[in-house]
Image (spheres, helix red, strand yellow):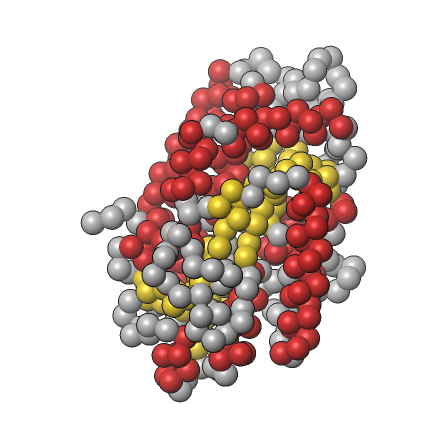
Length: 335
């Protein structure tokens, strides 16, 4: 029987966490002060990677894989700290207030900047210009899935069920919520959102039949799909996903819904250019390793290792598109 995605994520989290602890022990004399200019060439101490989501989800695993590789390239320990809440907004707020010296960085989700601002006031929205983007990282496509016991095989099946569908998402203001809301609205299906703080708890709820369906990143659901515990109903990409080639897109099923998640490495605004250059160099070297490439494949991730300018352009375009769609269909994503 295939190993479940949840088990594999716990194993990976434990292995990487253990490696970081060993590295920290071995480097007992390493300076931990945040001093970008300091006594020597950056970095002279540990680099903290923070995660605005629970352990076990895609953002967490991507961060840990990147931290392990970059820490090795830079010759320092790179501990990962989980700080979940508000689709990453709590972690982002803490990061933007940190000293801009390269010792506190984070992989952040596009949805925090393209979708979450559509659910809160302008004053509450997290703004990308509060950060320096180091590099794009990867894209993670969404899949809507149901428990194998539900009997649903397609979006149309839910419409025929004649009941209010309870759908799990990875949080308010996330791509999972947007993709689901747009799908149910255009399909004419009565539905109620049940937000969770990340992909791992959303998956657990779906496996436990606490919700009828859930939209998650493919990497978070694929092992349980392959094991027959979950049935995929649709993917929200422009074309079918190589990792799930037999699953129809929402568009193929008559629903024009295109939502993807992508992530990028960020630092506090004003981080010195030489520090950003060192971080970018370490990231690129990590991207090129066989271990990291295998990590992407194992977790159904598509590399999006693009420049900061390309990341910013994508964020601007997606924000405009999503705002227009919500207005067109009269959808509110507010919790």
